[in-house]
Image (cartoon, rainbow over all chains, first blue to last red; front, side):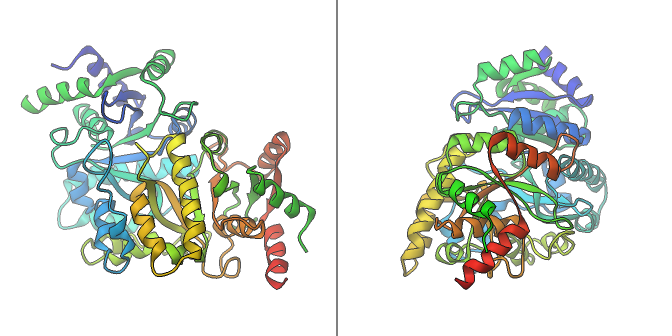
Length: 235
Length: 235
């Protein structure tokens, strides 16, 4: 059953607040700040770059991936191996913490200017979320056409594609954060950023917990999310 | 002739210090923090993410691009248009400040763990710089083979490819920063990050200048660099 922590996290996400998610001992051992993409503002981006410090990325569940035609970056890179042989040499077959990278393409909304400012990144993410919401409902390639009309690639927001079966084969922040917004009944896209420490490493679990406490945020582990997700899928 | 400011900037880069470069009124109107890639440490990355806040990117001049076989991201994205038609729709034909994006592939050194920590990003950049230095001197595809042995893609460091003729057709931070490290006689790769303001926009030119003054850093404009570069190429 969903713990009180998970229930509290879902309420926080619905209200546009951050939730902190630590994946697991023995995996990345990293804490990501997580927010629902539909609530991202310039203030959200400012907090992510100042307090987290990693890459600001936006997830897409399998429905969004299908309706917008989103490839994995690895597919594009390896697919171009005959024109650019070095792309085959760079094959990511030795990721230490998982079998596969979640990296999708990078995008900018066409109304952004440089694409990197807090205003621009917030515009890209919030418009992506709006488009995704509608694209899931539409048919006949509507999503892909509208995606191209409104966004360009490459850009400054990294998309992350969840694995096909969320939290069955891969248990990364991409899947954990996306499962949370789905359980909250929101657009199935979360925006995430890894929390960095000042010692050169990821922020330690204890320090991330202390940050959550100081800012009144929920702190979850991957196991909390997986357990709630299993119940949610049954129900 | 190179101004005193440019001469001072070249000394700073040789010593591993930051230089601030504002491109131009009417272009991006952004200031990037610039450092020579060969001097990047975990402390460099920490300062870039905390004080600049944009994307941390590493440039490659045409010699590095050729010796490592580095494509532009746009070439890979459009090249996969028949398998992923949406990639054609997302064509970046409306960048407001330039004709072409400098984005190359993203990489991680194979010895990184998650790839995103200050230690990991510093390792990727400093090892990229070491490899580039040697690859430029070698022949027979040595660089491409060693690149693939030691790096994987996608990753957490964005490579930026300069235009073929540096500062003749394109005058972006990619070209400005790379011209500076070339004039300093260093490995032709710079690491750059856009400075963000707390109002949602890029840090204003005046505030960037104030940051430079407070931290004892040289502040240059694109015009300063272009003028010195023209003399350098003649000489």
